[in-house]
Image (cartoon, rainbow, N blue to C red):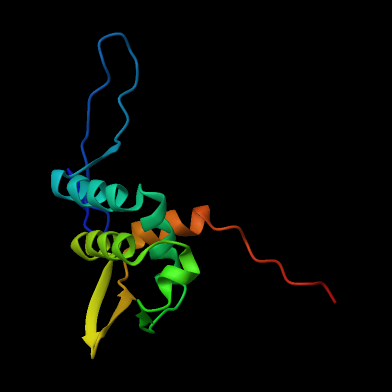
Length: 128
């Protein structure tokens, strides 16, 4: 049995079945990794949260103030607060308070980044 710690995968060797069909040495995801993947997928399954995460993640290393998000994303403040709370609870963003405003920073979550990258249309630059 071999493991891949970054992905939470465990490779299990299997003998071929009696009918001669192969049983590949396929990696199996650990239960704890599966729970983490499910939490990220559940948090990003809502379109508003997916847009919020993409918006915050598009500003790497910088804080995004919640004051402009309702206008930019076309959602009400209470809806925004609810969905930001879910992203914080899922560990996808960090929240900090400065005065009356809350600021959000995307955390490095490879699965979430891959989902958002796959759903984001590529930017094209004009050719010279």
